Image 1 (cartoon, rainbow, N blue to C red):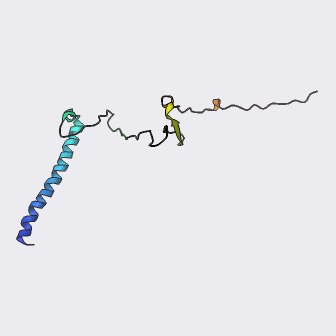
Image 2: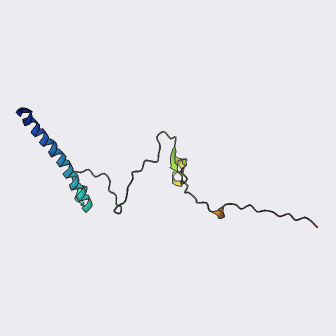
Image 3: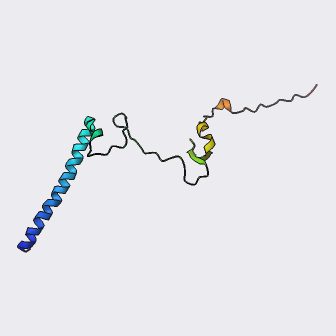
Length: 119
């Protein structure tokens, strides 16, 4: 490699190494501040905080999709406990039925009728 190529490649390599270090170090600092519960992060101009959640350590938080489907014609998609999907009219949103667990005493019992011969 020529001396001119070395003179050009050294600053480019140094810039790439510095950008990687800056990114990793910033993530490390942010992670340590989050673990410490630093409230200054909420007012920091460096970070845009859009949502704050309180949950016990080790909790997993999943982002839920909006229950309203596009072009659904006034229906909400609701998954039932057995895995089926029901479309509930928007007019019943405040009255969404809760699942009822069936037990054996709720099932009508068929009674056998004994017919005795007349004597």
